[in-house]
Image 1 (cartoon, rainbow, N blue to C red):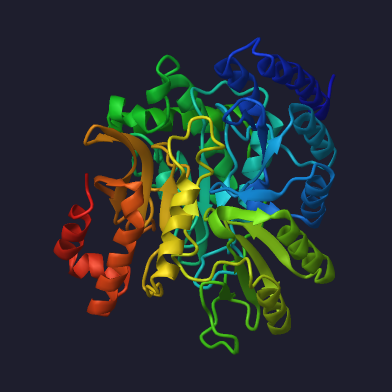
Image 2: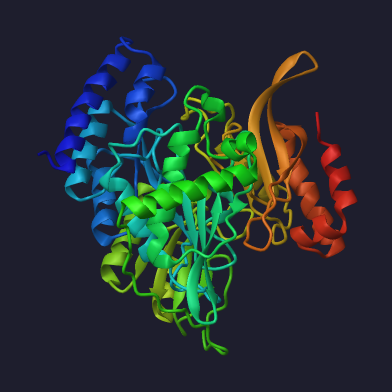
Length: 518
């Protein structure tokens, strides 16, 4: 019987053949995507270059995988690396043969791409600070890795209607977005007993939805039963005929929430009868001290861990795009400081954890020129055009234009929030979940087709309150930097941060937005 790696390597041979047929225009872009998507590979706009997405489990980057990515950038002359909003790494502008060679080498190092796209369970997202976050309940890392392992052991067997996303958060801050995913878990405790709160059938994109609270405690050792029950429900009730309504959030809309939860319970009972999926993971409740002695001041690039005198440095490259030369500097630092741990976040950042004061200062200095420091600088953007085949707008250029406008006009940026930018309505930039979001499109304005973005505001994600951003209308791409500049002036004039301003001066905020709508 073939091992999984042998099966995956046979798939790579088929991908290589399909890639050449696609480049020779023997098969369509859609046909190629049907073959490549589930393998974490996509053709870029223009049809000559390709991208690959590594399934870096829950954003955990081992030293072996960091060095492997570095080696790929050197061997294949890759200029930059993209950190995604699903805690993964993407490499772009590659030939199909290079893509396949990279996949084969990565498999030998247990770095997978299978299920990185297509109708499969995607990377299990977790809080990047899980295990070191102040006020967290317990570390969810091992549970996320077990779910990932469970998915990967049967990744070639899944036939889902669409992709399925699982998220796990270690605290009520819900940094992983458990309340806006297909399946979400948030660590909880009652009378000293740990458990998970669970949320079902949420998601961003077209017709987004907040996840439905399950309402019952989930025993940590039984978590795989609950995941498998949702997978089975998805296959039984998901729409295989209409791709636009195939995500899990459409099932309770069709069935009604009560019937949906009843159907879920039936699948859960069956899974518990038929399978043995118990986990044996020791849980140690996290302890946050009353007093700490960290000497370095916290900011958007430096976080105090709950372990006294240990720090996490947040490295956010512009638009999540880090130059390969800068990535190599981080890898070298990691080699020289073996106690450090690297994790990717859902905000296109890399978190380097468990640093002492001297190490934190050294890394901050090392990354000073390419690490974005304020919230507005730490904005997020999907790759957009000219790279993405389905992208409509230049999402990364919008962020660059905003920052250039701020710098050129000496606009204060300390009070501005991050912006979340998607090149289309698919929400790869999570525009519906942030303080301010933009989704790209085209619109006829005075007999001319213009580059535009729909503007969203007020999105927030946490256990206590998750709200999707409200769509206010459409702005010209060229006018958005000025709008952000005017917003900064309003925040300064009122001596408020952004969240306080939209809560207390919402009418003023709405009037400001209206000035720029087309």
